[in-house]
Length: 143
Image 1 (spheres, rainbow, N blue to C red):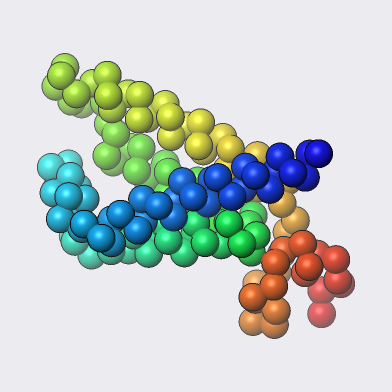
Image 2: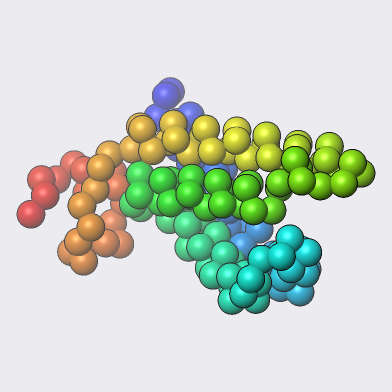
């Protein structure tokens, strides 16, 4: 049963990144405007990079490929988003509650990513078998 829980959690975390990535790609103006309102330099290229990271990372988590590496990458992404875009400590009073809630919610996501990374097998970066799931690769010796 624990493997079912880990798989379900991995898929849900993947969806948490995939769906916003698709929404960013579909309506980039909103995300760019939000980033610019936080004085993020190079907002447009960073938004596209963020969308790509969300989509690719989400798909890799859902498909069970390079889970440990992707989970740690998502941890870095969540930390950057939290401190750059959900900086409730520097906002006017009207925005503080919402942004504090987003900040704390993201800490929960970050905790889930760390747990997932801790339960996922280490996998070497190699072009051989890159498309195979972590489960099928960990069942075979590294070559």
